[in-house]
Amino acid sequence: MSNIFKPYQASADLFKILAHPARLTILSILRDGEQCVCHIEAMLKLRQAYISQHLKVLKDAGIVSVRRDGWNMYYHITCPEVFVVIDTMFALSGHPEPIPHAHSNANCPCPKCHPEAGLPVSRQVIHSSE
Ligand SMILES: [Zn+2]
Image (cartoon, rainbow, N blue to C red):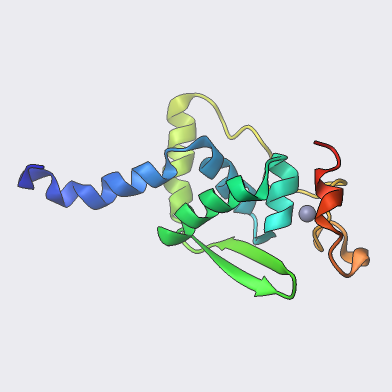
């Protein structure tokens, strides 16, 4: 690749990270604070393997970070500036952020949605609606 592109490469790489609807949705869910992987799973109704793959891309890029608490893995935004770009993209595309930011979900077994539950519910409960 021509050297003239070199200064633009890092920015282009970052755009590539953001250029996926699954990753934009995950960032939207994490926007208002950290969430358990199981919460993201319950909101997207997708397999954990698929979600983990996208979380890894976001984590490797330094946009999110993970914290372990007992059985649960909580992801949070480490680079909030990313929402300046994302909000601009939403405005440019003419399609405002379609899903509300993270909210309580009756079908989600995470401790935030069910603080009274204590220990995490078995994964089978999450997949029962599939
Ligand atoms: Zn939840």
